[in-house]
Image (cartoon, rainbow, N blue to C red; front, side, top):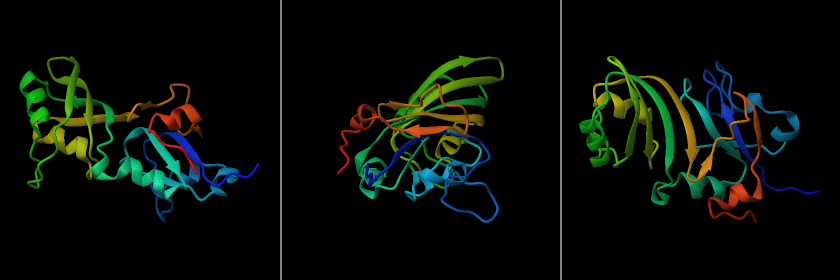
Length: 184
């Protein structure tokens, strides 16, 4: 059957870049089989090279715009491990919007502290923008360093736990509808 658009969920592995081509590094497109690359998909937004987790790929520019436009305020949730002990003051600072090292005022986010030890913390952070290294820079603004980062969800779509690192699959119609999106 004829299919104009493709919508994929990938569990992006670390060390792979969110690009369609690169002369030095492996890209997420390099992980796709030929029957999928035929559609010329591209990443919806980006994940840093060393970050893993949920990445969407499509060849539908309207879908990409609907999810990535800053005006849409689509939430992205990350799990992170950091060096440093998170506090209630850090939760409040993220909720107010922290100022990054370059003076950029990040939009308010939601920080949930999952665990702490004497030296480290685990957290869940939900943000609605995607500036360069944003989660890492937000944590640095709090005096913490990210040692592990994984995107768990975009909007109400959660990463399929059955997908191993580097694996992908097509989104179901029900998953697409989570974005209130209907392909043409």
